[in-house]
Image (cartoon, rainbow, N blue to C red; front, side):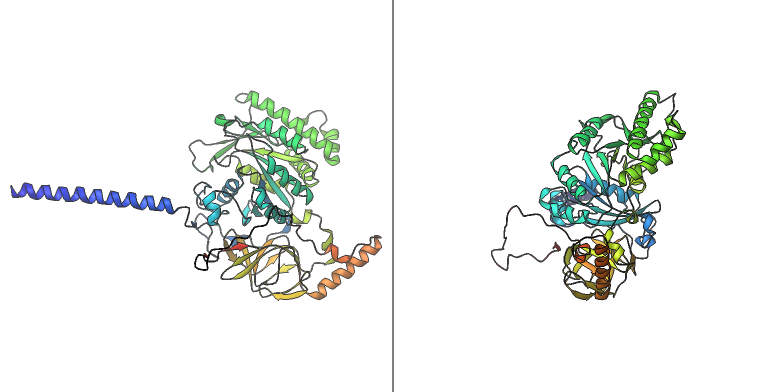
Amino acid sequence: MFTKWRIFAVNHQRTFSVHLNTMCYCKIKANLKRLKTQLPLTRNYSSAPGIVGSDVKSLHSIINPPVAKIRNIGIMAHIDAGKTTTTERILYYSGYTRSLGDVDDGDTVTDFMAQERERGITIQSAAVTLDWKGYRVNLIDTPGHVDFTLEVERCLRVLDGAVAVFDASAGVEAQTLTVWRQADKHKIPRICFLNKMDKTGASFNYAVESIREKLKAKPLILQLPIGEARTFQGVVDVVNKEKLVWNSNSDDGKDFERMPLSEASDRELLRETIEARNSLIEQVADLDDEFADLVLGEFSENFDLVPAEKLQAAVHRVTLAQAAVPVLCGSALKNKGVQPLLDAVTTYLPSPEEREDRFLQWYKGDLCALAFKVLHDKQRGPLVFLRIYSGTLTPQLAVHNINRNCTERMSRLLLPFADQHVEIPSLTAGNIALTVGLKQTATGDTIVSSKASALAAARRAGRGEREHGKKREAESLLLAGVEVPEPVFFCTIEPPSVAKQPAPMNSDE
């Protein structure tokens, strides 16, 4: 009898323990879920300086690549078109994050502010640095809401190219028109990515037609979708006549096959691809004289024989001249089509040396940089984002601010990676840098090596203008700031008391 009672007591104790643990687990889980939007999440998405992990690349390997291998691009679009999700996939496939972040989960790299993760939107632009197949890509993820249009404006000012993301079910939307006009204003070449091809109601033809009609642009169809909405499986590379199909069993989208289209298994798809390729060749030949001479001379009888490399080079020239826009498609959320998009960025968008900046000729290789954004850090003070147009930046360098007519010393030089930064010894022309120590510099200021360098550049510019018969002041070529749009309304927010005032957070100037 005593033995049975002892067994019953032990079993009852185990049952109570399991029940208690279950209650604790549920309570902890509920608390975490409730606090998820209140606590900023952190992700170890970059290797520590000088350390290369087994699956995450180190930023030190790409500090100063050749200028021809640099691409400064921005991601721009209407609200909820998929900019941040596309950026997240780009970072993952290029090897700079260990896992795929999600906007709904609040763990993306570029949306690192607590307010962004709570609301699931992009509020401020964020810069990240990565490499892809030997190319250095400085990427800026911009907001889609009209309230933060200044963020788009000042970032486009320093970029060489842009990726316009579209919701394939909606086509061109209201804010798409705004960011497109901003890109036109700064004469930025761009490519179009028709995102959300897996979404119900997605239509490739409708989205392309809306680009043609609403944006008054000439779309160059470089890809065709394999299926739409629920049947979306992959894309067809029109230039190379290949199909790219993603493995349905792959969770992260890294596993996909690139196969040439065959008459036996892809008869209808091959016919559509050949028609699209011939149409593409005709479009590009109308816009590029060099390619037209090549096509009419050697390949007038059969467009199928036109080499893919020649066609890609012609599309690059047409894109650089902003005569047309290449169009690609995919689904960033379903991890399809992002790798070909990265290939298109490096193939069709320009490098810094292909962009014309007339004022650079007056500096003769001396340092010239533009401060396009200022962040305030409570520990390090002002953090100034600089686009370097010529010369080299190094830590502890004394620089001259033309706008403020003052000289400051830069204490540290960093490579931006969202809210984490890597300290570097130098950075050359064509790159985007983050500096510490420039306390008087504001958005739109021009930074040069010294006051003497600025005066020498002004004299050269003055002589050049007199030779061309222009009456503008020489300094107008040197100071290229950011135009701030008129505010919709003014508002001041104050706490009821000092005790209610929250601790200072990172804010944008």
